Amino acid sequence: MVFSSLYFLFVFLPLAFLLYFITPVKYRNYTLLVESLFFYSFGEGKLVILLMFSSVFNYYVAKWIQKERKKGILLSLVVNLGILFCFKYLNFTLNNIIWMFGLLHIYCPIPVLNIILPIGISFYTFQALSYCIDVYYGKVEPSQKYINFATYLCMFPQLVAGPIVRYSDIEKQMGNRSANMDRIASGVERFIIGLGKKVLIANTMATVADDIFAMQVDELSSLIAWVGILAYTLQIFFDFSGYSDMAIGLGRIFGFEFLENFNYPYIAKSIKDFWRRWHISMSSWFKDYVYIPLGGNRLGNTRTYINLTIVFIVTGLWHGASWHFLVWGLFHGFFLVLERIGLGKLLEKAPLALQHLYTLLVVVIGWVFFRADSTSLAFKYIGKLFSFSLGGSEAVYQLNMLLTPMNMLVFLLAVFFSVPLAKRWLDRSANNPYIQWGWMFFLLAIFVCSVVFINSSGYNPFIYFRF
Image (cartoon, rainbow, N blue to C red; front, side, top):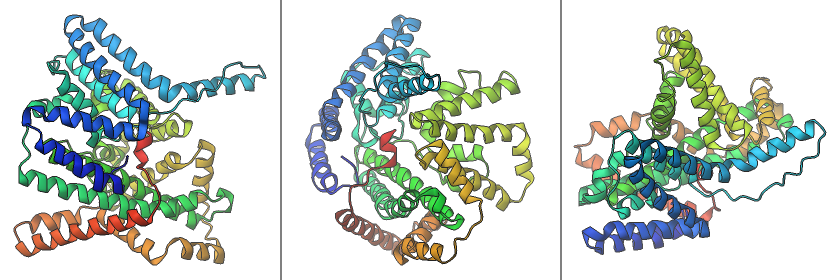
């Protein structure tokens, strides 16, 4: 079940709200847990058992960590990462073993397994790990009530695509939270903004990006290739930040305050700055639970560069069991190391426009590795970007077909809303009653238009569902 579906908007969500708010306060976690398990099982069926096992296992292993710290945390790491490996990386590993045997012309009897990747397994596994690790370091006490921990881990607003919520951030809210009208109104507003981002902008950009990436790379002109990757650059931002907005909004309605996951990443002035703004919950997770335990920047420059490289290898593979995701992670890690070596200081002295141009160029090229179906295809596509071939009349015809007036309007709106100009204007006008009424009608229009678009378009799940 996706947030941008009519069933979710007009059946599941109203019933979930009704049941939640008519439930006595002390039993609301039970209601929310049942709703979350139903939400997950609606699309994943029996795989909900894996989620329930994770909640039971991590609840009890965290208690054991208090008694047997090293044994407990080792068990947590082995089981959680083992499950993640089996479902997400085992086939990738076996396929590469078979490929290496093939290079040596040796018969390999290893079978290819038909393993289904559970939606959201990376997200809820990382949440469970952060909880156990925080218990190990004494940052949080193990939950004394299973219902509280299970609700935290399985909560449907952020279950399948984040943000990655840490137990320490909402520990107090699990047993004591309120949902007053102001908070509910704020949550509804945030949800509608996210819905509009996904349905009106991301889905429109997806039609352009998908059409171009479906073409034969050899037949693309440089102009068409740039249109394709720029459309995808906008698609992935509005798709994922739209989901995060909806998750934060839903959480707020239920009385939770989730941390922000995006902060206008496309205005970043460096790749380091980009990763402070993009998928913040994941970036901070890797910093706190991988980079710092490896030594961070405390063990000299060489070790710092190695640690950064390791983190971005893991970051790439976290997004998918494929070589092109690994290359995408290494690509970003390479520029982060360059900035550490000295490029960052040069950028600080450069004009602001040049800083933004450099960052966008690196990020956009990086998205080619992320979007392409293989590493070789990504390199071919990048070659087309810099072939500087305009494509003549055929490219003009393709552009006219791809960039319809509606697509062009959405493209321009996407660029505009990628920067904080509108937000700053709204913040300055917050006390103007005319602006407030105008904003309410604008939100209503977004919701109505989103419903119309959902009704007239096909199934289009969120990009990060597969991670």
